[in-house]
Image (cartoon, rainbow, N blue to C red; front, side):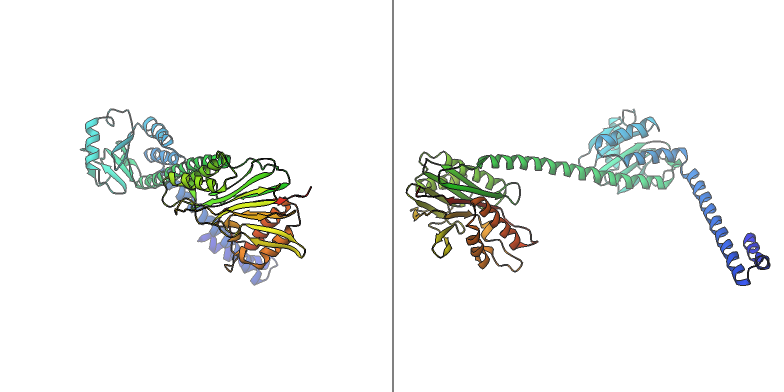
Length: 449
């Protein structure tokens, strides 16, 4: 405090030099605070240096260097390399890494003591129930209270134990052992997390392959039948979808339109979707809609899933006869937009039968409608018509739906599908979609040419 006293004694001198008493006092106080801060910082630095010299003694430093190495380990092989480099080579220590529940040896040093089978049995038996943290190994390989005279130490971290055989325990600062235990705990959590991430990545790759396989069942592109313009929107909510669609040209005048949705999500739905599409494609007569429905029903039942079924729409467009023959198996509101003298009119095609693949049925009613030039057939999954806004109101029941469809029907079919998609996303706003979105639209060309 002598220098502090000198700083305040300097007040009169500073005042005499031209400053008033109060400014001189302020300058002296600042000098005092600056000196005190420098003195405190110097003292702290000296204390840290002294602690570091003590704590970083050779034996402690060996453990700390191993601990620091553990901090950058990401795999079991990394940890084994750290044991070899920092414990075996640098410190002449033997180590055994064991999985506690199964006594599985992950790694064992080649040193004579640590490779002794009887020693291993003794250590496993006496430290089977060792507590979380660090315990010391006595001369007879029992548990010791302290590191004084210890034969080694055991670090128990979760499901693992690391036995380290060394005579240096008494020379290592206790804090070094606690630090090692904490770092090993972080390491094992890190390895577990990385393992889970790799598993997720592996599953993601598998699901990606499934998704790619599923997409291979769908048409790579739409055909261009005579007097019929086609467009599609297919947006699965996740990689694997239960929605499906197809457009198959039967002959010069007839085209089969297919849209459906398998119950549920995931692999089972994807498999059934593929079976359905292939069943229709390989059918000899694609104009016999009732036979196609029965074939799909049998194929779904043969899969053996008690809770799986499909809703679907099959529509056979015949531009020569100017007709649409169809079966609607519980599909959500297939729509025909007709052109009348008073403007476009939206007509919903009611279901003709129930679910396919679940409930037995006797008859397959087939309906037929006349087709006119510029009419649009819209086949959409329930991910379109049943999507809801923030109030829970469904798009298919909103006044804007029919009005927008009528207005958009004056465009080409690709623009029509784009308009319906834009309406869908505008309707839900910021809310995320909760289902797959599939639309297949067909616009009839000039039938009288």
